[in-house]
Length: 272
Image (cartoon, rainbow, N blue to C red):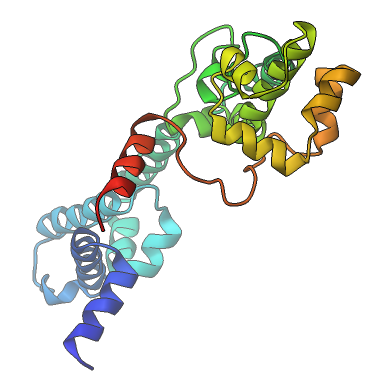
């Protein structure tokens, strides 16, 4: 098999050189444990054998935290059998301590998980209301609803599984946030009896002009009729039929502000 193919297969199986080296070390250790007579002669004194076998088991437990007797019987039979017959107390204490160490390292589910998930479910409904001072329903704003600070680190998923699930479920897309803000703007235009044109939109909202036009075209809104008939914001939002994770009109997944937008403008303005 060509060398390049070997390298591609190794990359697919192990991902990186460090993991490959670790797996080699584990296999080497397991092989030596399965056939200890290669390194330990029959004439070795029992105390020396005990020390050597203890070291082998200790190394295995270090390489594979959390393994138990079943694994040792399969992977290091002779070593495990000798220790079980001649040094059983040490072997059992080592195995028990190793399993307990692994379980204690795993974060337990927090007692407040269900309570915080309920608080979040109730709180996001207020965040989703269409008002003048709307905020996007993102992770930071949802966590701010809780009575105490909860970390956004990976451990949150294990410590707060119900809360983490709600954070993902209730998360608002950028386009849904723009839609809420646009609907509020149109309700203000109607309330203030302003003409429903671009000037009024720019006066009352910071939603990008391109996004406003995309929303108008996508939902085929007639702004004159909309303002004339009056606007009930929650009803209008519900009638759009889009979810809170709506990805927006097709063809508008482009930056409309910030550094990414400026970089796109600069790139497009370069001479071809």
